[in-house]
Figure 1 (cartoon, rainbow, N blue to C red):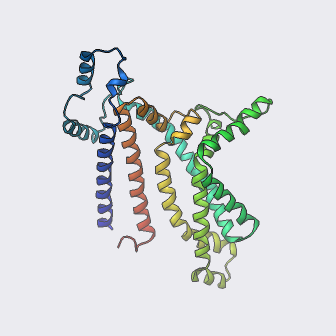
Figure 2 (tube, rainbow, N blue to C red):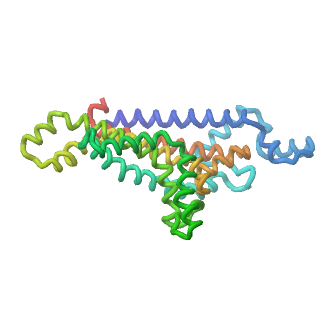
Figure 3 (spheres, helix red, strand yellow):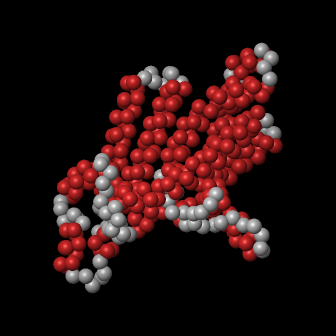
Length: 309
C-alpha cells in the first residue's frame, strides 16, 4: 500500500510540474502585458523601463527558471494591474469559491444519490423516468442558459410583482448561495444520478444481494445497507473529481452571478494579461484537482484492495 501511495504522489508532483510549464509558456505567447499597461502614446523608453521592472527583458528560459523556483514556494509575484501580491488576491477569493463548491457538491450528493437509488429500485416507473429526465436536462442545459432562466423566474419576475425573490448577484447570506449552487451543481448532480442508478442496477443483480433477501432481511436494509454501500464506490470517485473541478471555480457561474471567486479572478487576469494572477489561479486550481484526485485514488484503494495491486 505504501508503494502505491508513493507512486501516486510522484505522479501528482510530475503533473503539477507539467501544468506549471504549460501555463508559463502559453501565457507568454498570448501577448505582451506592457502593451496593455501603458497608454498608446508611451515612449520606447517607458516600455523598456516597465519591461525591465517586470522582469520581461530577460531571456525566456531565465524567466522560466525564476518562475519555477518562486512558484514552488508560493511566490507568484505582484499583480501587474493591482500592485498586490498575486497570492494575496488568490487567498482573498479562495474562501468564496470553497464555500460555493462545498454547497454545490452537497446539493449533488443529497439529491443525486437518493434519486439514483430510487430510480434503480423502481426501474421503468414514473420515478425512474423523472430521474432520467433530470439527468438528461442537467447534462444538456448550458450553465449560462440555466443561470439566466433562474434569475428571471426566481429573481426578476417575483421582485417585479412584489413577491419574495432570491438574490441574483453578489455574496451575502445563505440565500445568495441558492441560485449559483443549483446552477453549478446541476450538471454534476445529473452525473451522480446516472452513475448511482447504473451502479445500483448492477449491484441489485449480484449474488450477495439475492442471498441477503433469501435470509429474510427487510428490503430497506438490503437496499440501503448492502447494495447502496457498494454502489457508492464509483460515485465516490466521480464526486471527488467533481469537487476538484468545482474548487477550480466556474467562470460562467461566477460572472453571471457576480460571485467574487477564483474563476472570476482568473477571467479578469486573462483579459488584463496579468501573468502573476493567472499563474497563481491556474496552479492553485491544478493543485486542488491533483490533490483531490490523489485522495480519491487512496480511498478507492482502501475500498477495493484489488486496485493497489
